[in-house]
Image 1 (cartoon, rainbow, N blue to C red):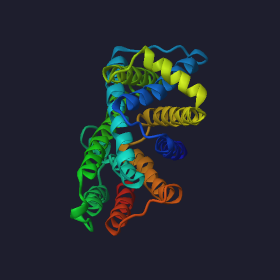
Image 2: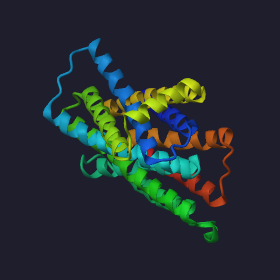
Image 3: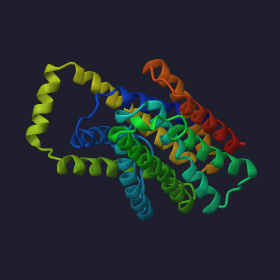
Image 4: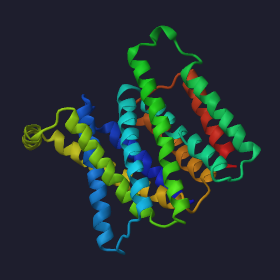
Amino acid sequence: MLLAAIAAILFVLQSLCLKRLPDPQSNRALFGLIAAYCSLIAIGLWVWSLFTAEMAISTMTWLLGSLYGVVFTSTMFCYTRAMNTGPLSYSSFYFSASLMVPVLASMTLWHEKAGATRWIGLILFILSFYFIQIYGKDQKNTGKTEKRWLVYCLLAFLFNGFIPVVAKTHQSLMDGREAAELTLVGFAVAALCSLLGWTLYGGGYSRIRNSAESCKKNPVHWRSMLLIIGVALSTGLGNALMNDLSGKLPGAYLYPLVNGSMIVLLTFLSAIFFKEKLTRGGAIGIVTGILAIIAVNI
């Protein structure tokens, strides 16, 4: 339980660092950001492996690790866009509520026990979405930006929910082995996917040189680098813990505990650090979501 709580705190730090970073105005800049912290994570894991046991990466780990990397890149692209086009509290709720996906997968694919309270919890999640997105909303203010934010939230919901499914599938097939290797392959592939996206959106040597020169002249970039390192540490350690725990704890217990803690902490921190105000429907929706987490966790 302690390690799961630590993972939740790490993911909260991840969201706060991402929110504090300057808004990537273009898709190229966002892919560059993702490539930066994924590369740091992959390098860190590789260095760590040099001082521990030698890694033996199986074919299954390469395959599922590659899928993990692609899905992770898609997740962070959509989640970062959601945070930059809408409130952190609501964006993080959608991101965290994606626990429904691995919970349902745990109940169906791995036949984990599903009591009445867990089904009640899933129904409460559906109600929480209703309260956040429909109840108390002023339809006149529903514009293009809000619709775009909702699309990003829903995509982040789906992609983020699929990540633990991939990790748990790997751990089930490998009998709890090669969790660290899965994380290393996943983030290495994520870095390559992000670099590919950065290149397709117009990256090049001249842009790298101009960015480097700008960093020397502008101290704000150094602050951004510290935040990127913070994202790398929190994301890498958090995902490594989750990949390891997915083979040791039931998914119907692990994911509600971690993601539910994220929702609660980020809701309060968003109000404190970013002065975000919840609407009546949003407040009811988040409270309903917290009750859903409690029900699923019983």
